Every structure is written in C-alpha cells, then in structure tokens.
Image (cartoon, rainbow, N blue to C red; front, top):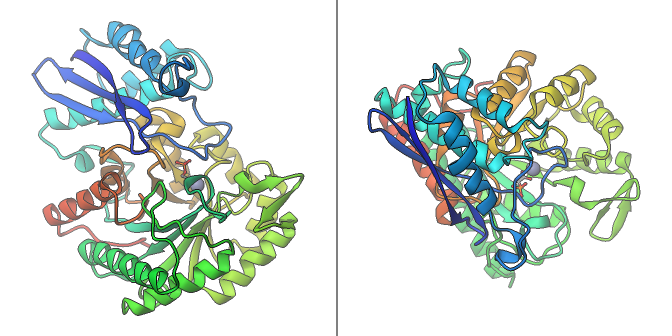
Length: 418
Ligand code: PGA
Ligand code: ZN
C-alpha cells in the first residue's frame, strides 16, 4: 500500500529545475527518484511540464509538476493498495488522460513511477535490478558507452555531431570496461592538450573542443584508444556515434560543418566512416523529419552497423512497433522520461527484444545522481548503456552503480550478448 507521495523541485546537472519524488509505503519503506531532462528532444516525446513563469528560472520551473504529484497523484494513489507497478502506472495515465502526458507532466509521472519501483523492490528486500525482472531475458552487465566528446546541442562549439562514444566491447568484465573508458578519456585529454585544443567539458562530461569535422574527431579518438593500449573494435574498444541529426536537418537536407548534404550524401558519408573507423553503432544518423531516408539508410548500411532510433522513436511502444513493420532502424534508444512510466519503458524494450531490435538504455543530457537506468539496463539484459563520459558526478554515479552490481553479482555475464 502507498502511504504517501511527495515531490520537491531540485536542480539537474545543468542547473535547471527538475523533480525529486519520494514514495512511502505503509510498511515504512521510503525511496526517492530524480527526474532526467533532455536538450535535443524528439517532437513526439511525452511532455515535460515546465511552469512557463518567466520570473523563475526563465520559465523552466517545475512547481506545477511538483503540485501535480503532491496534489492529484497523491490523492489518487496514496491510501490505497495496488497489485503492481503496472496498475499504478496505468492509473496515472488514466488520470492524466492525454496522449502525451501533457496535463500532469511526464516529469511528474516518471518520477513517481521510478520511486515506486524502487520502494516496491526495497519492500521485498531486493536490489532494483533483481526486482525489475525484465521479460525473461537473463540479466547481464551492459557495455558502457562513454560519450567522450560533445558537440551539437550539448556544447557551445562548432561541431554538429552531438556524441562520440567509446565502448569497451571486448572488456573481460564491468570493472575493466569502466577502467578502459576512463583510460581512453584521459588519453584523449592528453591528445587534445598536445594539439592545443580546449579541454572544457560539455553537458555529458565529454570534452568540447572547437573541432568541426566529425572525421577529425574520430581520428583523435582512434589515436586515444591506441595510446591507452586497447585494440580497436569488437576485441577492444569500439566507437558509437549519436550525430542527433534532427538538430542539423534543414531544408530537406543536412548541414555538417557548413556543407549541405542530402539524405543520400549522409548515408554515403556514414558508409565511408564505417570503412575507416571502428564504428559499431550510429544513433539518429538522420533526422526524425526524414523517414524515407531512415528506410534507405537501414537498407544500405543496416547490415554493417547498429542503427539506433532516438528522436524518431521516443521510447514509444506504438511508434517503435510501426517502425519495425516499416523496416526502419535495427535498435531503439531507451529513455524513461521520453515515455513517462517504467511500465511503458519495459513494454518498448520487450517489443524491440521480440523483433530482434537492439536496445540501448540512455541517460539524458540533464541528469541527477539517480542511478535507476543502470539497474534497468542490467535487469533487461539489453547489453548496452550510454550515460555520458567517465567524468561529472551525475554520469559517474551510473558507472559506479554498475561496478557495485557487478561486485554483488559476479555471475552475471558482461557484454552486448550477441
Ligand atoms: P538529450 O540528448 O538528453 O539532450 O535529448 C541525448 C540524446 O540525444 O541521445
Ligand atoms: Zn540521441
């Protein structure tokens, strides 16, 4: 039985307001969750409710969402016995009664859903990764995808591609994977210093030098992986990209470092990158505005590389199911606040799993120290988690949680699992 639910307004890693939600059960169990927030959002994401009162935080306050938790959600959910998290998530969706959770706010709903999942796990004396049993897929330690160099909406440089990730695909264990990520990160820093590039950090903790050409960045990262002493690719450290191309889509094409490229030009550019660099995954290689390009990209390079839909999928089970039917992408990015409940997040992952689509669990560029997604990635056995650089407390918290889980459960295998 839920005894009480309380939300407060806190700050995220960008210094913008977000929610912390606490759920208390009648047995005295009390657990909290911090709500993440994106910057390069898909248009069909569940709605993050912001106050719009320009006298506070430039309109970004979340007191309305806080009031919705402490008011309507609390009145509906507290003082009642519920049979499952699914049932509560459904009750919240019914109460909101909109398609995109815009009335009560997806930020209000996801915070409540995450805190409740934690409370239910704690009440049973189980760690979250064990309680979130996924869907029959055995638990496994995910490959951490470290975003070591930031551009796009996450950094004030001229780099159009948003994320360059290093992924220790061939690491023997979780701890060694985190070590590899951190060593490559430090090696990259040395390379940047040697080239007189800035080593300030972007929103996700990656370096944000003023480089503009994606291939130039890839050369540096390959050099850093080698400097750190790791083999390139599946036996060692591979590279994943999230260009977040919806952000540089313009007039039916793409603008990369000042050049105008068609959808087909972009696909050719990626194909050339696959020839030159150990890239195993590309997320949002094309924009959400370009579904026909996505289909062509999947047909052209989908056999060679994981193609992850983020802005176009929004962790939405119905959108992902339709995309699977249409032959678009071969994997989905999974962000809990994009869809707004833990139950729907698991449904989206199940749909991917059943279709043979990959699933990469993800943080947002605005984060709190909350580590829910580390447990989610382990529980579902999806094999991949991206949660920023091996730097900045809110990113490192997730990687440290993975090390903690791996220490508790040395029996769990590490890696993509395919
Ligand atoms: P966001 O970026 O959290 O700013 O949306 C992450 C991503 O695009 O994957
Ligand atoms: Zn993305």
